[in-house]
Length: 479
Image (cartoon, rainbow, N blue to C red; front, side):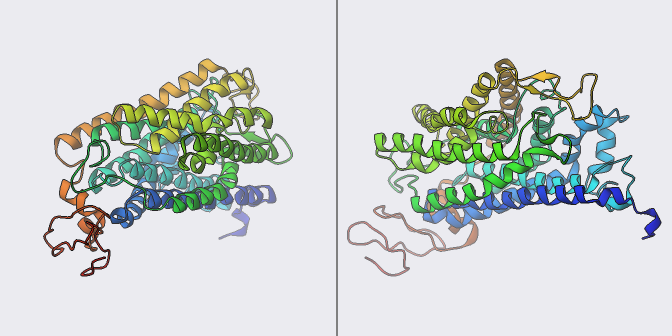
């Protein structure tokens, strides 16, 4: 490359600082993915454990690949509109699809007048890929132990390549159509958690409960977690990844505006970090109260995640003592949604209760806690409808954000689930569910459930019953 053509401003110290700043959250998202996989691995039955991991790998990859189409361009559309770029969506697609001009040139070869801080935006795209991969993992969790691979792949592609980008365009950015008016988010509560919670709710309804969940079945005791200790480990792994991931939910302007929340709020890295850890301890405390009252350890295990989701719209704008009070009640919202779904006969132990309960609760309460805090607009723009912090946070705009996230998920989820259900391609067969998906898809020996007589299975030999109706996990050996 001709050194005379290098734009040194694109690779200056401030740019390299921001590169590292956003690379760390991207790596942290992989840690969060591991935690999510471990949680599901502990909650599913042993006969579905491997398939649970495989589905998450596949869903995450498909969502990420689909995002490489025009996903990042959709999110960047808002900035082109704010900066007055002609044909803002087309320009975003031309630059940011996988073969676009802004991904096929090194930053130092691009005039900063055309695309400033290009290296930072390229690093942030990697962070965004991790973001949609997590959405794919959540979809796999929503249909765990009964969703067929084909609908999982198609749903992950649509969600990762189109719907999550539209959701972030609307509510997760300073100059999106809703966030520029006052809808406030920080960690993706609207575009990820409320969206996925709604999607999971629709899927649970259309998939129907797993065999033995609400009605006794002669060949299964139903979905009993195989390893709650593994769930605890998964939660701890997520707690390692979450604090650093929150760095990616804002803008860094060294020497000028400092750290600005993703929706345009004045904030600080220290405040965000303190609030994240406050939600952990507060959520654990609230979950502990609930667990001891119900004699069920599950609620204290999910406590820090419930607190984190409930605090996701408060990290950048609330004093820690307020965050502490708000997020203490997050586990109770998880429990309330779970009991409601049980009464309605919907088989969703974790995704919808964990995301919808704290997500809606925290998003709405933050409208009161941060009422009239300035938000919206892009730093440096001083006039017009995109002027920095021209809007204000209110409960009413938070309700608009909640409604938009629910609608964005519910309509396509209903359509897709209806189509797959009508064609018989939504749920695995009863035989596959009873024998286990590890056996059905990966030819592993079927893992019998203790205390449940197992009928002979083609391709798996005769089942061997123990003396008390239990089945040995070692082929040919009874116990």
